[in-house]
Image (cartoon, rainbow, N blue to C red; front, top):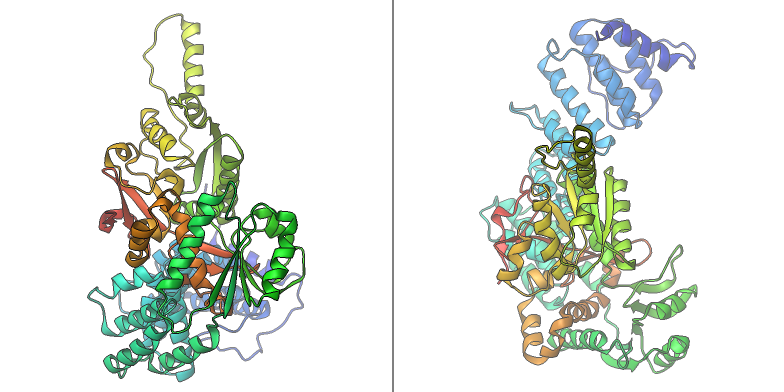
Length: 621
């Protein structure tokens, strides 16, 4: 099919965009030669440049078309902008216009939610003029953030800083650098500090790492900020660093008396005792000069009496409540508009549409891990998923969470299937998932028609590019090898922490080699003092080690709640994850990622762009 004449398309577009508007002449005072300011955002300006372009030729026409496209982008009309840019012949356009078109195309890609495409477009081999280079840095930084690479965004902003002259804009740029680094966990920042990096960027990393480590040790911040200033006397973040200590003092508030409401007797005792002792260990290891008084209250299964126990704790002087743990009790507290003292429950409200003042929630939701599996799969370029989960409520929850998040991002769940947990042969559900059963059915049908033996190789469906698998370690070890047997060995398989026991077993876990899964830092990169305390003092909690970590994080989060509320980019670098707070005061966890290699989980950091394999990862000992 022949493409329409570009000039004809241009004329038609001009008619379409001006058909409903009064005829005007280009008398707005807009310059044909100057770069259009980014804050100009009216369709009238876009239409005027489009009209002017019809009166020009060659490079002048291209420049005006690019300005029209930019004005449409500024108003969020990305499709119109895309049509206009396609009117420009890139082969005959000037080099300056070629670069402008590339930058504008990247902005359109960002507008359509495709940051990876934007990053490709924002790569130039030649040296750009400073003004264009600033635009490239700005939009690369934005694309890195949207693609999930805050480290690369910070690097880009540090490069950009060298071209900035206006002190107000530089200050804003410093804030964005800080916000980007604040998204990273403390372990990542600490590892980067050991890398051979540009001194200016290293200064930012060290400052961010100091801030993270100070989340559980306030004195550490004061001592190390002084050392940082001596090491980097002329660093561009010097003024910014001076505000950091004062900010910590203002935001971090430690209660004097904490009451912990847990069912310490009854069926949940093994879990809640692990939470309690993790909380106590963090309390005892704290370096702060004053530690709050702790009171543990056994709620058993007295959901109907939770308000009485809560009020009793407040009347006895508690100025902060941790718990309850059971979901019905949490639902009961959430029915009020405001709680008398700040409260951090150890589970989540069943369904929530409004915020209860003073109520915060934390827990180990499996749905969070399924959603992060969807995000990681999408981030790695996968768009068509097959979902395999066990029958039952747990599998349904994970399947729904994965699918919802994957489709929110723009992916599609092509195939879903359940299996019965505990079986050794998962042939039937895998064949149905991959449409191999249909391949066999076609073979049987053809063979019955020709009435003769036929050579046959089953053929799986080709419209999926990844598998999400929810499974326990025992099931995962059975399922993963069968994907290869059923001609899907090349498909990447994503899972949750439930696929790993938490203990190294290279002999058993060789069967799940190549499996990608998310887990908490406590399992993959634990805090040694806390881990040693569990090993020496609380060995009985090993089966519930993740809840021990939850208890420790809960203790430290209490003094960081106000800081987490202050900005959406704030993170608490905890043992259960890189923790942030959502609009409903629910604490959410960002987990680490690992892949099994020779039966061992290998941690790999996706914060560096293009690091899409665990080749530079570190093994778990």
